[in-house]
Length: 259
Ligand SMILES: Nc1ncnc2c1ncn2[C@@H]1O[C@H](COP(=O)(O)OP(=O)(O)OP(=O)(O)O)[C@@H](O)[C@H]1O
Ligand SMILES: [Mg+2]
Image (cartoon, rainbow, N blue to C red; front, side):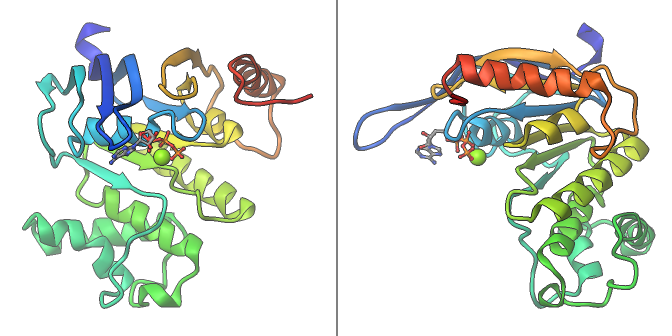
């Protein structure tokens, strides 16, 4: 496993200072993510999921432990990644293709070489024909698909997604989850995906990390041993066993009260 590890979190913790006293967001987080692995993190609101993602991206310093990405200690923002946030943040004055190309422009990469990549990503997420449209002419789901394309266009080895479907309706969520699965199966990027949805985590991940309420700790890591492509409409019995197990953990940690 040692050679194969792409991201390593060793006893990582985060304490935010606040006027009312320090807030421990998460602690004792130990996780080794393999190259090309798809990891989903589920946990209650406020348990430090976004904090973990930001610390991996170098956007938020950690207060204890160590994080390494590709063998290098994270001590500030690094650029070898793509991030998708809960709300698609697109620039209204650029059309969809140019929004996806933003990463290419910012990084000073060759436009001619990357434009076909951008077009291919748009097509594979159902946005062919909308390249010249402006963001306000698209639905929320379409905008979110475009932001996923933008995170991937420069071919980063790592994709971080923080509840990318949070603001979408159930049907659109399901469709975009299938898009993400397709793109991931094609590109096999290392992916860290945060969600509140237990079925989405099981649908997409190689391993699901289940966290406790704040201060967030990893309670369990489940190996999802299901063949791909997976789908949500016809799930095998084992799918329900995984989601059932995660619900059981949430009940035991007081996150879900079922009765
Ligand atoms: N910039 C910040 N300054 C101070 N405290 C913060 C900051 N960001 C987060 N926190 C605190 O850290 C804790 C964890 O926040 P975080 O956003 O990581 O949770 P989360 O698991 O992503 O929650 P959610 O599921 O609601 O998005 C919370 O108690 C929050 O108040
Ligand atoms: Mg969050």
